[in-house]
Length: 212
Image (cartoon, rainbow, N blue to C red; front, side, top):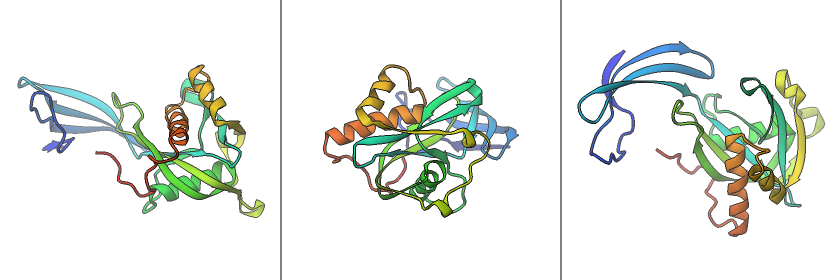
């Protein structure tokens, strides 16, 4: 596939350059992500080939209860070969579903909770050197249990989930001690602690526009 497109329309370059895509080749197409190669115009007149993962995107949820505890899950992640502490999270792969609804769905599916209030905490590009994946992290409060008959049946790695509640400050301590390394979990916990300490004044509405 070829064409002249600009990946970051409206983006500002230090040297006034526009990174036009001269050609694009799809190397792999999957359910969650594709792998593509693009030939991109570089400053100085040359071009460079950039391989990257084109991802559907994801949401994550810092679920904060009335006692000031956050809900963490411990899940096996095969690419790193071990269990990681994470937030309830999942893909934005349901057609027509908005991000806040996806977050509420993942909260129910992974930890059997509903939320009476949900706000945007932080957005992050998980690893922009090789993927366009964008993760929106929400803050969920006014938590309640999903009724037992309505709970989601978990399969594969999710059948092995460990769910715990940890004081928010203790969770931040786990981040700083290197015990939590999942990017959206690190960002979400630090953002939640900052938001709490500033009286929740910087929270964004659930339908706030995504960056870019």
